[in-house]
Length: 423
Image 1 (cartoon, one colour):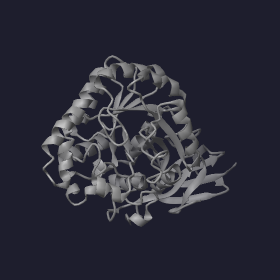
Image 2 (spheres, rainbow, N blue to C red):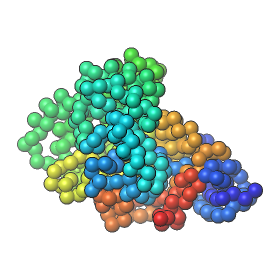
Image 3 (cartoon, one colour):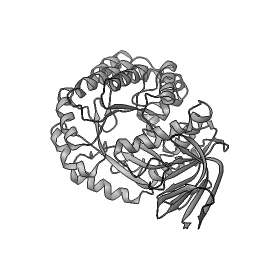
Image 4 (cartoon, helix red, strand yellow):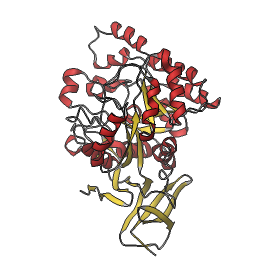
């Protein structure tokens, strides 16, 4: 039979790399093999054919902050980075915590060129309201500290809301920082003008304190699937691994910037301010080790675009990342020795399982035809003028990466062809 599309190259599977062709028909992977016929054929040669990357942690800013990002520009940035599915967070000016707000956001997301799913917000005044939006979300997001667009959720209500989320059957992702520790630390560092002192205002023990409280509360909800957002410390990874060893359904994610940068980089680039902050080299190495050998379940961007001038003038926390997903993946493989199969697991297969998206995340017959084809011989120096995100800048500007996405396919539709996005 003739397929709509055939990709030929080095297919990344759970068991390793397979020299093969992938036949696509009606938006679905039909078969893997050799000598396949197709109306169109992509000769990827020695390039790596990954399942389309799935980013479970992005902030697309619409509605309310459209000047920073919207679903059209955010999805263009995602395609640039090889991401074909992303999950938007609820902390907009109007939180996504009601059927009305969720419906309005879903309508806006129709202009996206990739698949957008949603995390639901949680009302501290009415935690049980999570059930009213369960059908429209893939999970929920809870903030244990104040951060951009989000107020702190009271710790004393944590067991109650975890029970409400467990009743929906959906997972929960938790931003873990202890606000009391942050408040005390912020007072101590006010007189310190160094850009990297922001890390002292939100110290590592604020994260681990919150993680411990979450683990203790999760003991009462053994059926609940939970994820610790943007782990930044060695201790967090160890706490999560220990909880998993005891049977808890807990995971943690690593953000690209916490893997690539350490605290010292903030001395020269204050734009790298994030919540949680960049940590020391020991913590960064611990995260990289967990990416390589287990302990980190998901690779995410925590894409949080702000306009560059407001980052400078207001000291806002958050960096964009979608444009550079494949850049950092290429660096993980070439410079850090992360196996491609491990990348496919934490950037596609595990996120799909976590979200209950059984139709994607792996290159196998019957799965949706989502692909990110990486060229590890196409090195590139990041330039702000090449960024697709509306914010117009990259935290990796002037950094050289060993590779990038060359072709991107979503549901059998070619979104990037030989480095050029298809309009």
